[in-house]
Amino acid sequence: MPLTFTLQKPSSIPLEVDSVKLETVREQSVDGVKATLIQRGNKQVTLGEFFDVTGSAADDETLIWEGDCSKIKLIGSHLSSGTVRVEGNAGMHLGAEMTGGEIIVDGDAGDWVGAEMHGGRIQVKGNAGHLIGAVYRGGRKGMTGGEILIDGDAGNEVGHAMRRGLIAVGGRAGDAAGVAMIAGTIVIAGETGIRYGMGMKRGSIVLLGDNPPDMLPTFKHSGTYHPTIMRVLLRHLEASGWSCPVGCLDAAYHRYHGDFLELGKGEILTRVA
Image 1: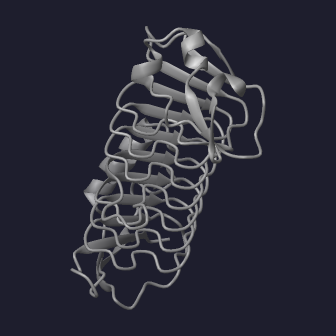
Image 2: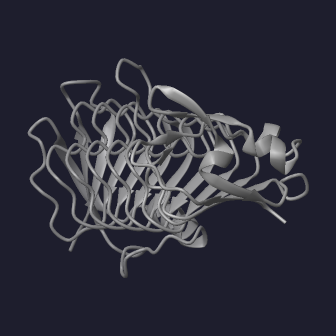
Image 3: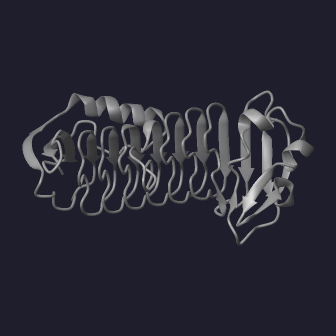
C-alpha cells in the first residue's frame, strides 16, 4: 500500500514539503512521518498538523498526495527514484532538481515545474504555470535531462536556459518559449506566444500549431522538408501518453536557424498547415 498524505487542514500560507524525501519516509513509521518538519512561512510545523498519513512506501516506493495541493510547494523535489502521484492540483516547484523517478499530477501544477531537473519524468494532466524546466534566477542552466509532459496549457518562458531533455506542451504556451535555450527539445502542440527561441544557442523548438506568430528577424529560413526525426519523436510522445495532433507525423515542416545574435545553431520547426 503506497504511503498516502491526505490534506486535512488547508493553509492560506504555502507549505514547503521538500523535507519529505522518499528515501527517508520509506524507512519510517507513520508516526515518524507525521513528525517530519515542514516549512510554513517563517515557521516550521509538523507534517501531521496538516496531513493525515497512511500506508507505507517500503515495498512499492510510491508516495501519493491527496486533496487540493495547490498551496503545497516542492512536492517531489530532488526525487531520485520511485513514484510520486498528486491526486489533485500541485503547487510551485514540483519536481525541482529531481534526478530520477516519476511524478504524475492528475490536475494542474504551479510555476517552476521541473526547475533545473536532471533526470526522471514529470507528467501533468492539466495545465502548468510559468518557467517549466527553467533555470532559477541567477543560475546558469535549466533542466539538464529528463522529460516534462504537459497535457494542457503552459505559461511563459518554457525551457528557459534548458541544457538537455524534452518538454512537450499539449495546449498553448506563453511568451518566450525556449528563451536562452542551450540545448534540448521543446514541442508545443497548440498556439504559442511571441519571441519564442529568443537568444537560443542550440536545441530544437517544434511548433505544431497552424498559425505560429512571426519569427524573430534573427532567424533564417533554411528550407521545408519532412524530417524523419519528427516521426520518432512524436511516436515516443504518443507511447508516453501524450496526445499528438492529427496529421503531424506525415506533415512537412519549415526549418529556421538561429538565434544569430548567439551561436545561431538552434532550430525551430513549424508545421506546414
